[in-house]
Length: 411
Ligand code: F6P
Image (cartoon, rainbow, N blue to C red; front, side, top):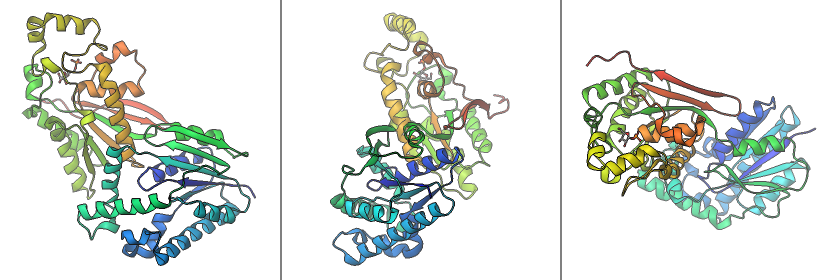
């Protein structure tokens, strides 16, 4: 009998399940038979609400501890049976936080290879957002959002108190799940499919990204830059057309900037999703706010040219590297947009589709991840307001298309 155990390790809300499903998708595309054994799902099935209170996770709570051990044993046995039958790779998706738990897994694995994959991410912003996402789980439905957050954070504290990072285990990969980077690895013996697994872990996984620019604004009509102007009538019609266009598709996560033009554009899409009976999550990320034009905010390009010719000329000469006085340039935008995109991908986890409603410069920077362009050409990428970019980038599939969502609008 062959087979491999991949054992996830990590505190709650560190992206373990997302990584587990990436592994499954990537390995299945190699023709391997993969299954995930998730202790949280099993716990909710078997114990329901009884297991959602923080005290259930208190290491001093003998009963809670015994029940959690029992759930872990059930899943390990199921995983072992899967490998003994037809399975190639069994992924144990749980915190597996203590050495004791890992020793138990090794005992049940009885000599089959084990690769531990430890998921780390201590970014406070992301953790907060991840915890908020978790509090939407049905197991917290009897609590207010604040109570649920408190309860989940307490649970994390209990796990922290028993957490032992990977150190003495023979084969492991420690992964920064925000940046998809390997932080540490050890390969004490041969692990089947190791190179493939490693490669999956470092790949960005974009199932379906719909990248939209906000609809026409009052400022767009006046030729002014930046600011926080609302949509025009035409912009609202574009947003409605967008909502209609996506009314038959499920988009569980919609990311906007903090500007009203972005929120207004997303609103009909959200409403359309709700009409279908879905409850998408909208997250406004400041990382997606339009380039800050500093002293030029709210000005027209022709005003900049006449009143600040040195700014206009310098920017025209090297648009990518030029930074507006007291503002940003494309070059400085890169770090924050990268961070926004990583955040969006992390927070949307395994979602089959996400939408980002961004701005002209922001969308250019996002596109530069997927589209080969010399940096000097990035600030000139075409970003229309009546079409969106549909992007898929997994190990199996790459897709990049510009899709029109409005007929001709007559204004
Ligand atoms: O004009 C709309 C806008 O989104 C402005 O707010 C922003 O300053 C500009 O586009 C960015 O485009 P460019 O870098 O071409 O000036």
